[in-house]
Length: 218
Image (tube, helix red, strand yellow):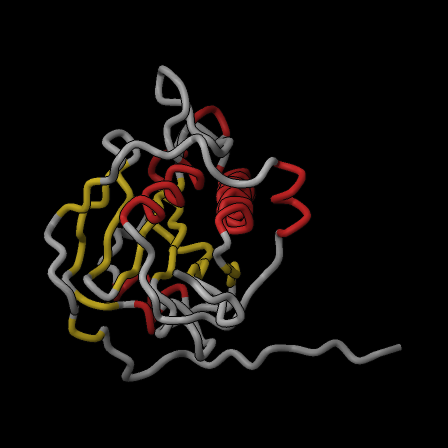
């Protein structure tokens, strides 16, 4: 029987956010999602894969907005989302770590709201590419929205929701020629403290997005 390979997990110590760069303000407003481009669903599934080498090229405002809308945006009247959620609780908040700062996706208004004016990409995981790729997504479960569910159900349901959002990101990236990888190897407590989250908000998963190194962009 082969021996199980285990990742060595050591808490990050002394690692601080970097100063923000760029001129983004407190809000980043997005144009309406572009529904005309991309691959058909079966083609996107065929291209879906994880990428761990990225250029530092930033996504355009249109690409970033389309990415977030695909991940968990509003796609119908009444506030329904592109990703499922138990009882429509929408308990997952998407945070975006950019060189310009840490932002949270405001689904209702299709925009980003800045939470911290710091570059926190290097705090979103242990892999060497997390601080170099143009953005890292952080999926945060807000358990305060799940009080109507039994406590033993909340963690599992939130994890399923985060996984559905992550797959939406994978499919968008496959369709748009971007690279991405979902990552569970992170220091949840240290990241929550750096993000100034409340005690009922927990980072579940991170996901890096960018242009893969083996693709020449125009």
